[in-house]
Image 1 (spheres, helix red, strand yellow):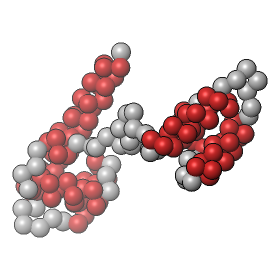
Image 2: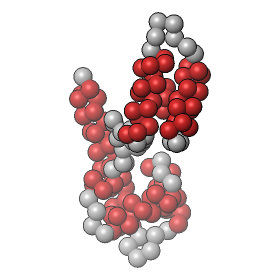
Image 3: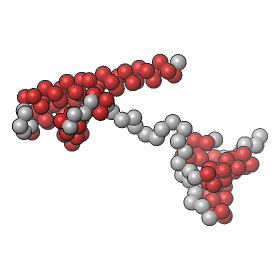
Image 4: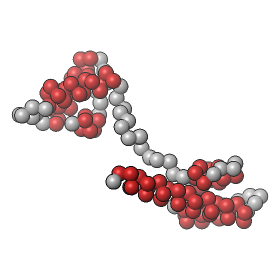
Length: 136
């Protein structure tokens, strides 16, 4: 099921890149020597891009860029990426398992405080509460 939605997302990104390539090609053909500022503004609005992004795409296009160079990059961190180093990751895991995962579970705020105390004792910078929340 996940593959179908991923394929759909890739197809949508490709179609959008093709649409951008066609529009940029027409703009560059219309203004071969220098671009009209108003034409760039209008195309940026039409493509729902900032002018700066459109100028970067025009530069890529003129440099012989391909349609794939005009595709949106995937945003955010790659799947499975962990921002913590191994030492802090292990400390957070041990604290969650030893302090939080009990039948009489303490509050999440207490868990965050316990992780902060354990990090301070180990001389490590404490992670953000959202980082701890994603691991619970």
